[in-house]
Image (tube, rainbow, N blue to C red; front, side, top):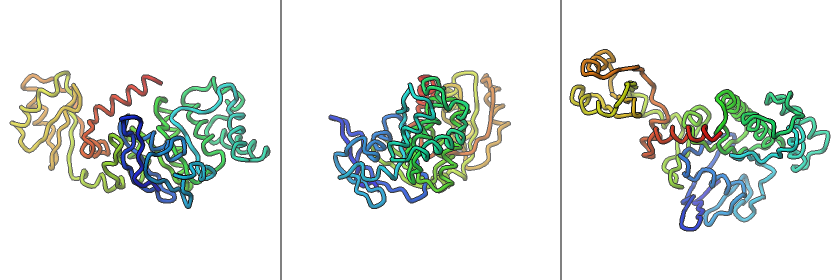
Length: 319
């Protein structure tokens, strides 16, 4: 599908020799921090930008030479809504359907069907400008699939919306996937990629650093035991004392007030907590966690999990 794709903006190479394919019916995730090249890659695939090098094929269509050749096959949900604020939800969907050549009766029926499926029937005739952010994301997704495309491009579908709306969007995406839609999803939410995707393309600095299935990515992690210990303050100062006292454990700060402790064998919580408290640490919580795709991401890319969490917080704050 994508071979040696490259895109430069002046001196900056936003997409650097990117190659991957997407199988029919697959849900593939492009995962990486902000600035990794995810949105630029998606813009290249959807014809919103032209590559400086490389090739793009969607089914039998050469989209490098003819960027719009596969337009009838794809639905696009951008990271920012592209719908009309002054139109109602119903009218926005009817307008998008008309762009794909659907007849009046069909587009009105399809708009009503999608509004019901997305839980927006009560807001069908309200102006889009009055919708909440979560409602806007749902209607934008509905507009992307109004023509029943077999291929769907989703750019950061849950960024900047509330938890309940994000959960609803993920459920809708999963239902589309179960129905046979091929989906390419960009996200910097690691948990979202782990939950939804079959394979992951890790992007950092515009380059692909790893492509694999979620199952195979997590396989090496399943033999590891992880404990998160929350302290009142200065978690990092305890790494060296713990390493001396418990040489089989690896301790590192997960944040300013949290220690991440790993071991190849099960971790006995009691001795570790007593050690900390006897030396003046205030232990607020100690909990076992299962290794996740976040652990894999940090190991493969070198991008710290805390940095990713801060990005999510910044995105939520800007919502």
